[in-house]
Amino acid sequence: MVWAGGAALVLLAVSWVAGLGAGSVTLSPLQVWQGLVYSGEGLERRIVWDLRLPRVLTGMLVGMCLAASGALLQRVMRNPLADPGIIGVSAGGGLMAVTTMILFPQHMGLLPAAAFLGALGAAALVYVLAWDGGVSPLRLILAGVAVNALLGAVTSGIMITHSDQVQSVLPWLTGGLAGRSWPHVALILPYGLPALLLCMWAAKPANLLRLDEDSVRLLGHRVDITRLLLTLLATWLAGAAVSVAGLVGFVGLVVPHMVRLFTGDDYRTLLPLSIVTGGLITVFADTAARTWFDPVELPVGILLAVIGTPFFLYLLRRGGSGYAQTAGR
Image 1 (cartoon, rainbow, N blue to C red):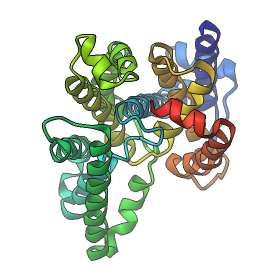
Image 2: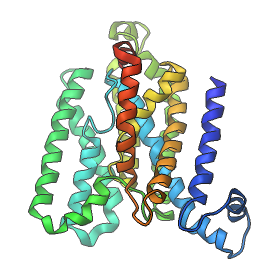
Image 3: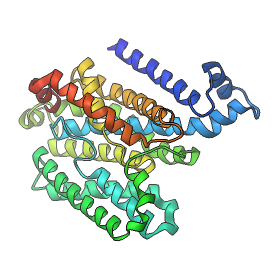
Image 4: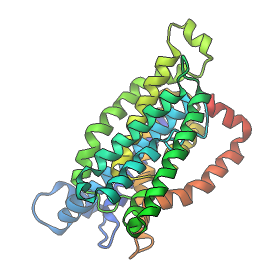
């Protein structure tokens, strides 16, 4: 699938040019290039380096992390509808973020770290509740749905009891990249990049989980350990994304299915292509969200949901039940 990888990388480069050039001041591709490579204090350089490049980088890393997380969870849970939201990872990050913004506004600097820890804590709680001498995909999903509902209820309760501060929370809950700058890049890079690199290791064990448990054991692998490690990696990826962009949905759910249509279900190609595709779709969507409705800037999570829902329904109609069974196998 060399052609698919090449096409994805070309589209990622195009999304970068579009993201760096579009805005209240439109830059041509040549001006974008000059802003990137030439030193000095020119207008192009300030727009590219100070405003748009950190946002594009943050969006790309967020999309990459969410897509990889969704792909891994769909394999671990053997469920084509799995994404970071189904096991409460997003809800855990959301609860901690809302708690910080509403109850402890004097500690707003800790918001990204709190969201990241909330995501990890929710995943740990799900795994503990699902453990019964081992963890099956069905118990993981059921425990995840329960924890997701509980955390969502607590979050709603906090927002209702502090209704005068809800407006400050909504942009984060809908997922957005407005105002993201170099400190956000510095925050997600040390967490997100190592996790994305580990995905190259995760392709082989993810492929093993296509087999039934007895076959995996006969090959000398421990199913529970493999599931645990892949779940931890998926949670790590989702937590890194949630910590800087809020609750951005549909990337983790839809992107692996899009890639699967072209590459099949071999994670040696599906996982890296999902990572690249998640990055380029998020950058494109964020560019559209901040330019199509000027002067209003939509959170990218809203646009992704509007676009992602009909596209996901199209995928289901095109693939039918056979496609769904393949994705979740």
